[in-house]
Amino acid sequence: MVRFACKNCNYRFNSEVNHTEKKCPYCGKKDVIKEPSAEELLKEE
Ligand SMILES: [Zn+2]
Image 1 (cartoon, rainbow, N blue to C red):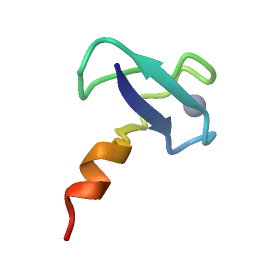
Image 2: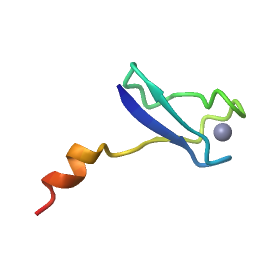
Image 3: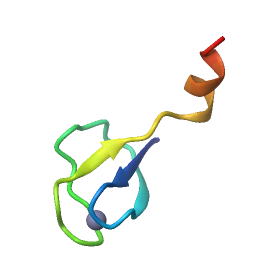
Image 4: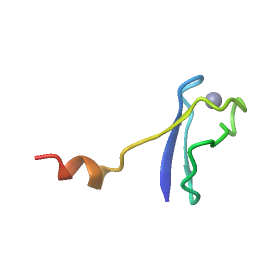
């Protein structure tokens, strides 16, 4: 699962597909960014 966040309406959702051109299911805009997972954040040392 990959977490996405919409920059337009701040809606957050999960998706199995890791795709950069994801559309927000809430507002339909393509201003969606991939959120770093907790694991990825922990790697930063
Ligand atoms: Zn949105």
